[in-house]
Image (cartoon, rainbow, N blue to C red; front, side, top):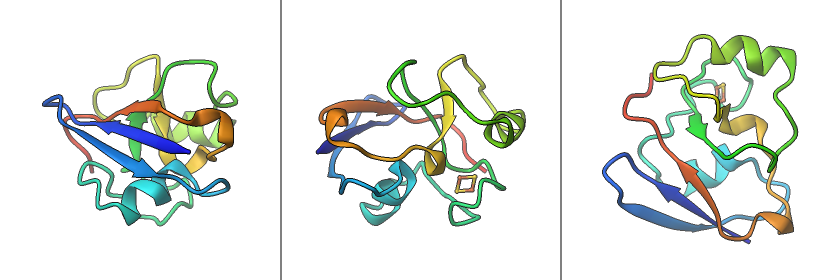
Length: 102
Ligand code: FES
């Protein structure tokens, strides 16, 4: 599947996303600048914050919810991309990126 990362300025990066990768890993491998992922996917830095429409991924677990409390620009659709696993159904999914990270 392919994921579409949309920057705050509206520019896009379309990224090949292997099934089983986290959305964070796909972004890092494609040098998506707005995803820093300082902790490498351990759900302890919150610098992999992104926005995804509801219902696409399972709801955040308690650890992700707690870490989301640290992000700037929190919205109802905020997620931590290291906690989102790519599946075939996600082809074409649009992931919006926040203005600030980290
Ligand atoms: Fe650190 Fe997601 S990469 S919380």
